Image (cartoon, rainbow over all chains, first blue to last red):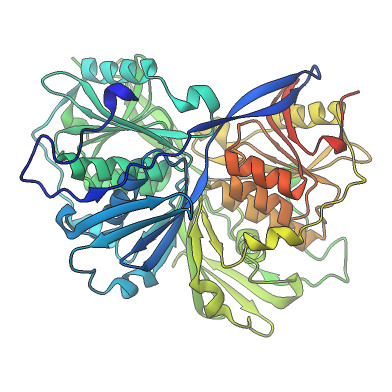
Length: 286
Length: 286
């Protein structure tokens, strides 16, 4: 995605902390031979997938199965969304080595109480990184999303159209989920589009880029091709997003958590169709 | 799914061990109000989703986010597929209590080395229960799938047709994945169809029912609506299935593991179309 390739971490905001990053994307698709119903051999593109074990200061945290397009941002966003790192400035270096399928995050001063916080894990609905640590669920009560931002139907349709036009690995090979971050003003613009075999990896990579590039969630729209399950809503809310949009459906807990945190959530958003489920106060149909 | 409702565990094989089970399915869909693009209020069915914390002999194992249709079979199949329980006879009782979102599995004699085996977890691609324990990856070398079974194109089309006709929560509410187990002889027959918000939950529930009803995998076909990722292929192979079919695509590691274990894997299987990727020796197009 050349037009969307994230800027170097330090470019627009020289005062922001800039960890030293490797830039170690893997090949994204592979051709394999299949045989179709007519007996013909068909070269078929399939999505890349590899294990990536995350170490923080030599402590092994987790092994993620990933497409491997944005491994450094994925590692940073994973630690951010799991609440294990509170600010980008805590990270000194992120180094990916596909020879050993590892990403090593070096912190400036360690993480206090890391082993206790790793002790309790919840395996959740989401594709991919379906693990939450400790008190993620309890942290929802502390979330306060901005109320003075608006999304118009015209802006939503612009989001749908940008998604429709975007070239994706999904179109080439299937088997991946996509997430995108949009700004709405001065015009609707796609800031990132990330795909992964696990959609939670895609969310986390965007969270990593938001830190690296200094983007806050508070006036942004988060888009996912996947379902609006509990963990997807929790992650969007934790990233401070007032708007969460999907072309898919939702689950009971996704709906209940969206109501609880007051996020403006739209599903089945394709072309000029959508269903507005929660947070109607921020949406204008006119 | 009344026609497919699994038999009581002890009915057809009185000699098999029959744990005492609660029968605690949750409501599967809920209606919520949404607003569509015309401004109209639309009653919309959404899939149920609730946390279910699994305890074995009072030791907390994991919290699964689940539709809750088959919680007892899910708990049994989870323990089976994670390699934590080696035989159904080790389980004395499975009791689900939705008041506290818990399922308690009581074993006959405890699980040796449980805490060590819980120590290493891999978060993987799959929806839902994306956790594998310890040496799951290493266990692949020990798998030997039957070579003397055959799947014909006609049988595959019968599978596709039975899937197409089946009434599903997906059709009503979206946001769930489905898995099914088929026998091929004397005729193609759907033994189970299980849906869940996490597709790994659906796989595990089928693994649980296979134990409860005494079905071996060795002459069966496993069908999933979801992608053929690494963990899906590993689980099918561990359940002894020679045939793995999906209407979706596959990933690189799914493909590589399928080749390694020699499973007959078909993707994009819809109506009279499919792509045969691996294990061609068991497939007859004529």
